[in-house]
Length: 393
Image 1 (tube, rainbow, N blue to C red):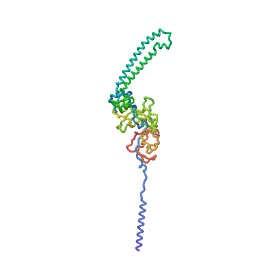
Image 2 (image 1 turned 90 degrees about the vertical axis):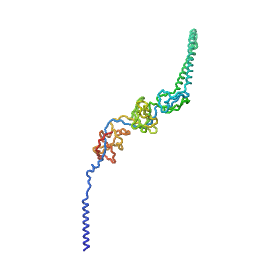
Image 3 (image 1 turned 45 degrees about the vertical axis):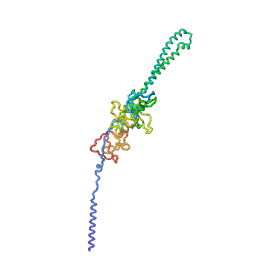
Image 4 (image 1 turned 120 degrees about the vertical axis):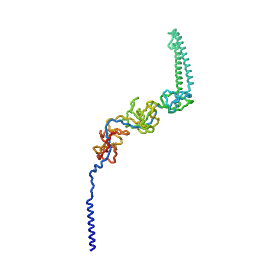
């Protein structure tokens, strides 16, 4: 009987355990999905955009070069006796200022000799004029008995022409001697900055000798390249004396932050750059060394330096300006519309280094999402940060 009692107890334990397991599974809690949409709305920041009139900027990189650049040479030969203190690398000279003096002794003597020859020629002409009176009296006695050819001989017309020619030749020789004497003093042809000097006191020079390099002080050029597609937005001068678009020149490597020089578009060069196939332009920068009072204290332009040219483009009317970072892939913009994400395709009119100018696709007062989202789907729910009250820059 003991084994039967033991078997009965085991059955009772098994039945009790099964009942407990059934009770546990029958009372298991269930997950609720209520309110899931509201809890997963993405938190974003937005700015409100408006249509208006904006002026784009077109950036270009260029090289500074002088608008006037010469290698100075003498027009007469001789020994250099004197040099100006300003005729040294880094010096400034005014137009007409003496740079160096070539020994003028030979040219003074030559001028004196030519003047003496002129006085002799004038004296010969005066004597011949006296002979003309005698010849005219002789002709009057023989009037009617001479042919036209003999008439000129009797009146001494060939001798008179010769005397006059001698005077004219002597006058020309005097003028040339005066020029040679003047050219012995080498002067600055324009307001200039001295780049180099290749002569000193005692140097023997001849016509064509390289005395030094001078560049003009009035203007420098910045030779830059821009994409051909940007030319339609730039004011290009039509004729001589016209000014094109305003340009700001900056040298980020050498100048302080915020320093710039003001210039204007001077010419569009009618040939593309051979390497980049971009359009070439010349920007004119007045008073590049800050030599004039109104530009003193401004940073000087250095020939050969690379600078940034920021060209002010023509004004765009009835467009929306948006930071380039807020235009997404394939020219789309994220807009928050009634608490949901709206992916808009926009028509970009122009883009510069910082902004995109949109003609169609956005409306005045639209709220553009500026937050970067990892996953976007048209119609996704959005919610604003509490402090949001964004406006277009």
